[in-house]
Length: 106
Image 1 (cartoon, rainbow, N blue to C red):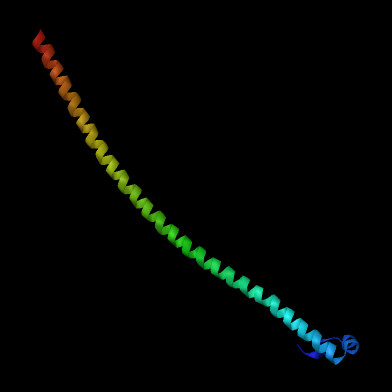
Image 2: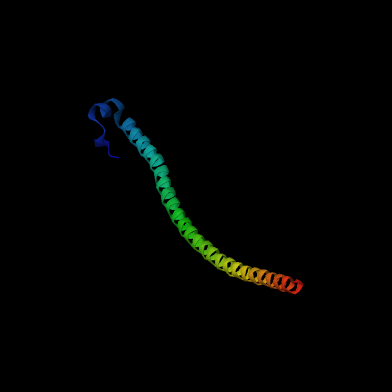
């Protein structure tokens, strides 16, 4: 900072050494305040980057889960049809046997 930025009444009261010490104090305080702000900005930037990566990973993960669900659903439908076909054949065989047995008894 420059000494001419300090008001004249304050410069007169502090003197040259006091003014210089005040300016050094303000510079040091400004550095201390700006460092956390830079750290905060870099933290926010880093956090935004990590969230973006996380969103991409989540989208890829959900895509693979959806694919697995679709594949499992297709397999369940296939096995369900095979089961029901087997059941129809079994019931038809039992009915055929019963009809023959009833027909033979008469």
